Amino acid sequence: MAGPGASRTLRVDQFCSVVNMSSSLQIELIPYLSDKYVYLLHDVDTRHNWYGAKVIGSAIDKNKIPGIDIVLDDGDEWMFASHEVHVMETPGTPKQMLSSIRKITSLPDDTNVYCGHKYTLSNSKFALSIEPENEALQSYATHVAHLCNKSLLMILTTLKLEKACNPFLPTSSKEIKQILNIHSTTNDAEALGVIRQAKDSF
Image 1 (cartoon, one colour):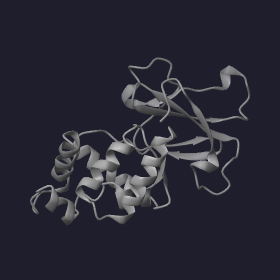
Image 2 (image 1 turned 135 degrees about the vertical axis):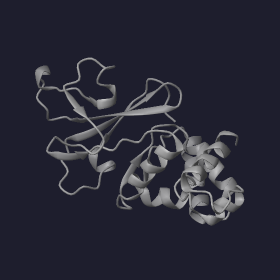
Image 3 (image 1 turned 60 degrees about the vertical axis):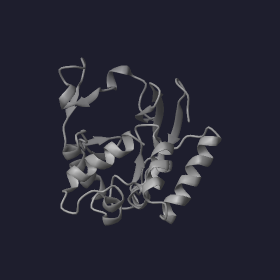
Image 4 (image 1 turned 180 degrees about the vertical axis):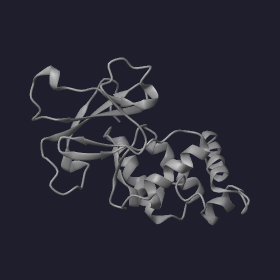
């Protein structure tokens, strides 16, 4: 994994499958703290004039962060470098996370997903502990371990792969509920909370 202060620039065709996407559009991966990532999306063909740059921020943070020029909220659409950006808020309680997961899983299976934390290796080990017979997960966990052993970044995945390997997505899975002793009548939000607690104590 990348160490503190390290950064890596990825061309747009490495993370986006949108047809006719500008090749000048890039994403800058910036690790921060000990286990998180942030991403800076930029167009290298933008003029150098500083006054052409705009600060875009969340409506939630508009009173916390000075200098925001464009305020965006959940469901908003915004044009950047001739491409349409759809804003999705993904907050954090089990009930909120379930809503966020449903938003994300409604996207096409070939949607590329970038993680915000360096939890991929520990998550894959946890997932194997509750789904040891999952062949897709076995293959993915081996791949993740290989990358981590070589200190390579593990940031890009697809929604299709996440659906096959991520135990937080199929919260209605009978197999996962049985292994974690989640009652069949437990709703998905409560089940997600139980899975989260199981991961925290793993």
